[in-house]
Structures are given as C-alpha cells and as structure tokens.
Amino acid sequence: MCIDCGCSERTGQAHHHHDHDHDHDGRTIRVEENLLAKNDRLAAANRVRFTRHGLLTLNLVSSPGSGKTTLLETTLRALKDELRFAVLEGDQQTSNDADRIAATGVPAHQINTGAGCHLDAHMVAHGVDHFDLDNLDVLLIENVGNLVCPASFDLGEDSKVTVLSITEGEDKPLKYPQMFRAAAIVIVNKIDLLPHLDFDLDQCRQFIRQVNPQARIFELSCRSGAGMDAWYDWLRAQVAAKRQQAQS
Image (cartoon, rainbow, N blue to C red; front, side, top):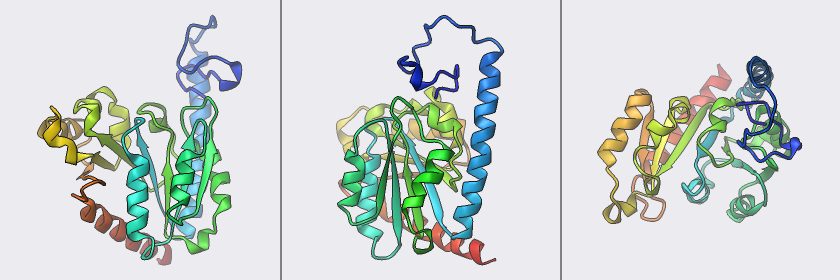
C-alpha cells in the first residue's frame, strides 16, 4: 500500500506509478490518515507486547544494497552466544535473506510483501508469532529496501536504524530526510571502501546532523571489522536497559 495515493498492490498498478486517472484531492489525505492511524494502534500494541517480554526491537531500514543483511549476519555470528536473537525479514519476493540469516543458527521468519514497499505493524504482529518471545533478547526487523515508505510506518520498534552505504553517496540524508529524521541510529556502512571512492565522510556526518541532530552515528565495516565493537557495545547496553525497563 502506498500512502501517497492509497493505491493497493492489488490494483495491478506498478508501485509509485501514479498515472492512473482518479482524483487524489481529499481522498489522498483521508486514506493516509486512516491507514497510519490504524497502523499506529497496532504498533502501540506491538510495543506493549515487546516491552512485556523485555525484548529490544530494532527496525533496520535502508536502500537496496546497503549491506543490511551482511550487517545482521556479522552481528548474529558475533553475539548469538551472548544474546538471544530472532530476525523478521521483509522483502517483496524470495526468502534469500531469511535463508542467509537462518544459516547463522538464529531463528528467522520471512514476510513477503508482494508489490508492497514496506512492512507494517500488522505484518510484524503476525510475524513474531513464529518466535518464542519469552526466550529472546533482541528482535531485529530487516525492512523492505527503500528510503521512503518504511519511514512512515511505526512497527512498535524501540528504534529505527538507518543503514547508509558509502557507495550510495553522502547526500542521501538530504534527499530522503524523513527516513534519517525518523531514525535514532544511523549506520554508515562499508567504510573499508573509503580509500577507493570519492566519498566525503565529514560531509556525510554534517548532512545527517542537519536533518537529525540527535541521531547516534556508527561508522563501520563488516568486511574489515572496523567500528563493529562500538555497535556491539551499544546493542549490549540497549538490551540491559530493556531488561531493566521490563522489571520496573
């Protein structure tokens, strides 16, 4: 479902091709308000459920090819003997990413959205039914890869984590400010490629700060391991805080 016009994937229209001949005035606003209000109610219920189980929930968003799945694989292999993880994988088609996560030994469940461009709270509510929440510390949600639609949909997560690969260019925060504004965490990924690319890391930091001064920024590389320890330490601290919150 696209919130720009309320078009459903069931119409057979390609997503974001708004050349169909109906009027968007007024109807657009009502559809978007209704859609987001319903999603927000379900997200609030998800959040209560996750908090009751002391479950840290992170919603990873990015454009395609940013390295989200590799980041998840690396993180799971490093911490799975220390923390109990499960992963919800969102994609339009295939179970390729869920298969990669399952190969790490961590429970994974695939949600295919068809022509849909994002996960919503209803999908997540049913997706987590596949896990034993009493025996988890962290739920990682890998959202469908795009920097637009997932920004608008609260899934009941504790934080959105936006992953930006340096191969995408440093100006993505300015081009897609809603996504970077919605994220508590921004991961600048693949920094091992810095010597080979014309990418201005300082400029990228400034652009992120420009749209979201409060964002916590991690700069890392799954290939070289640079910056990964800081990411792991942050995860450990967030799990500890979540447990304390659940006990209070």
